[in-house]
Image (cartoon, rainbow, N blue to C red; front, side, top):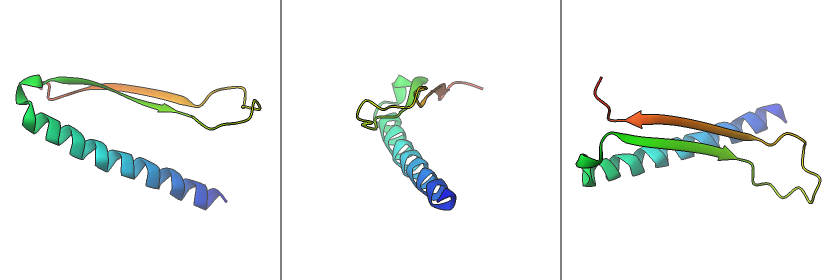
Length: 70
């Protein structure tokens, strides 16, 4: 099960990464004056546990800037 779980995780993250890249690039092309962009990516568990949820929620927040001068 561990190998299947890891593959599911990687597939989900890869799909998100590719779609996010395409969306952000299209946005920047349409709105170049919007740079730098301040973005937040949030991972949140939305599983329906029928009131038996694990104690600690699964959540991750990452923030960053795109297009800032180096």
